[in-house]
Amino acid sequence: MLSKIIYWFRFVAETLIYIIYPPVCPKCGEIADEYGALCEDCASKIFHINTEKDLPENISGVMRITKYHDGTRELLLRLKFENDLSVLPAIHKILAEVSVRDEIKNFLASADLAVYVPIHQERLKERGYNQVELIFRDWLKAQNLPNGNFLVRVKSTPRLFKFGFAERREILQDAFKLAEGANVRGKNILIVDDIYTTGATVSECARVLLGAGAAKIFVMALASDFGE
Ligand SMILES: [Zn+2]
Image 1 (cartoon, rainbow, N blue to C red):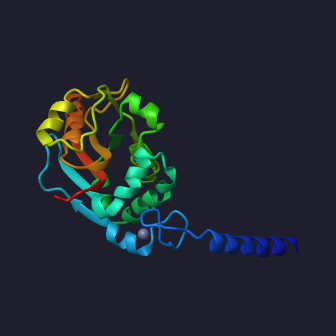
Image 2: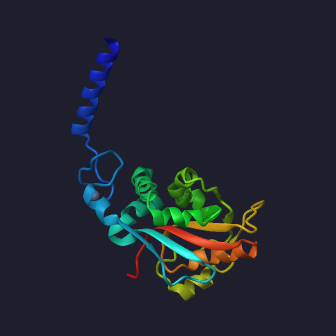
Image 3: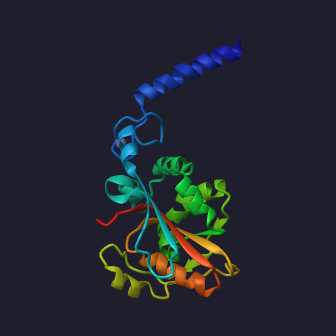
């Protein structure tokens, strides 16, 4: 009897909450089907799973998952610059959805270890977290891919969005080093990052990893601009 009352009470309470405080899409603000999820319209437009053809130096493959503009841009800006962790469920749902696709599975299968693109200690203090780790950590674990902070950012660099590839390369030179105790020798490494633009950042990360004896370097990015 009591369990029935509790059941109905919960049902009524949840329905009320749903009516008063409906789930909204974290990207466009329209009503969504469930809390923390994108609305159907945004979800249908976001995916753009695609492998990069022009590979940057030191990189053996690049997988891009969503569009940046008109894609995951708003979610990433809020995560990076507004400390808004409420966008994470929507991002995690995107990853959960792509993990059943063969091209993603095969791409992940080519790596032994995943490495997050690190942020500088100063930025970590400011932001409180490395957004790349929050985006990918649990998902990589669920895919049985060991992952961690195997690189350290030793140089604080300005935001790179306004610079071209050559300038980025120069700015990023010697910006990374291998984390103490990390062993990448003979391993195929997947570098994960939030946004892929020119590939200058991951190329420099890859140089350090190859210098430490890594076999091959692959890259997976949540968002990319696809030649815009
Ligand atoms: Zn939406």
